[in-house]
Length: 53
Image 1 (cartoon, rainbow, N blue to C red):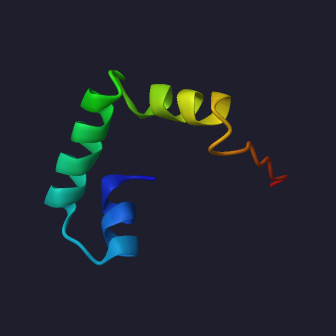
Image 2: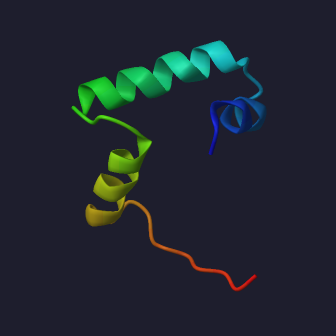
């Protein structure tokens, strides 16, 4: 999800979302959201869902 989409879901502006995402990545020592998704999947926090378009 983009920062804008997350902000919409949480009824926040985009700025605090950017801050929180950045802090989460920093604390987990991750470079980007792709790494975060890989770690979350590996740890069983999310599962892959494939849809046929």
